[in-house]
Length: 219
Image (cartoon, rainbow, N blue to C red; front, side, top):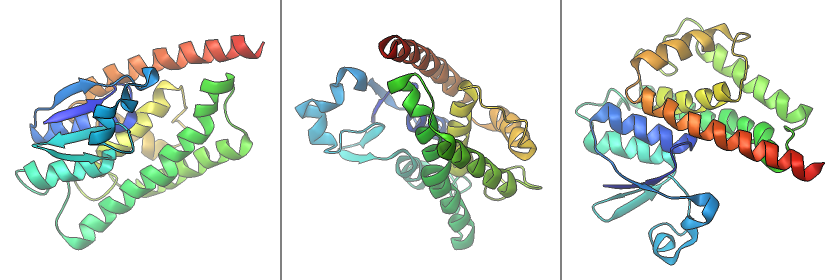
């Protein structure tokens, strides 16, 4: 199956780690969004929203990382451990996935994305959203090894991708001990962590270069 991605993309890394956990091979196709490669007629035909990650499985195209991750588990998982079929267990996993999308990663975007444009982070309100999101995550993890139940799920993988993105942005996790403990364990037990970290190093270099460029422009 073809997988259109960038190594540093948070959602792309979520899919890579999920595929690794399932033993699914991805035919990785690098798509340089900074060069506008997602806007070619060929790619827009595959994904009209021209976003990455995008997966094409035997002619079936799907995008949005958390959807791709759950699709892969449902189609290729040897069991349902990563995405339980039990309605209540699945509901908790889904809640955490939506929390990651609408709160945790959104907080990262609101606070850190402005650095790419101006060389400066978001305002105090954006920072407060970061803190609030981590406070919620810290609460979810009280007395828990995993974010949604008693075993590793796609929710852990997605949130690991996001929290590790905060990590390379030098966010201090010490204020959130449950998150810090979970993060240390997740690195050990999540298949594909090494590739996730390699992608993050590429992202870190991009952030550093864009920050420097933005600062030069603003001076």
